[in-house]
Structures are given as C-alpha cells and as structure tokens.
Image (cartoon, rainbow, N blue to C red; front, side, top):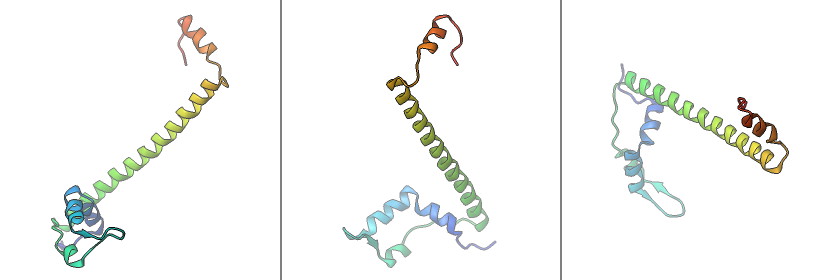
Length: 109
C-alpha cells in the first residue's frame, strides 16, 4: 500500500488539540487570521500506512456521525420538553387526572 495521505485522515489529524495548538501558535493577524505556507509545511503529522489511515478515518467518521445524530435527537427532546412544560404551566393540559391516579396508587402513564 502507498504511504500517501488520506484526506479524511488528514482532516481529523488537523482537528486534534495538539495540531490545533501548533496552528494557533503560528497563526498571524488579528482581523483576518492566516498561516504562512512555510508554517503549514512544518506541521508535524504522523502518517501511518494508508490502510490504517482509512480505517481510522472510517471509525472517526462513524463516531462523528453518531454524535451529530445524538445531538439532533437531544435537540428534538429538549424542544418537546419545553413544549410540554409550557402546556402544563399554562394549564392547557390538566395534571389533575395524573395526580388522582397517583393518589389511588395506579400506575401513571
């Protein structure tokens, strides 16, 4: 296998805290930030065999997708919770039946 870089692997590598620290250290400018090409070429990068890069990229991509999906689900649940709380607090939905059922020892749905 060739020892060339998988672009997905390089992207994940460049997002690592150690690599970000190197880039931040060499970033110049205040209003418009940039980094010199000379400094980009000096970014230390570990380059495992291409097959390993591809495996790592696939694993990281799957984890990133799972996190994104979980964040979407969390957002939906938070919106649902907010909506339900508003309905309960404004009295649009009565909690009296739930309280009565709980007082009788019945299971509350």
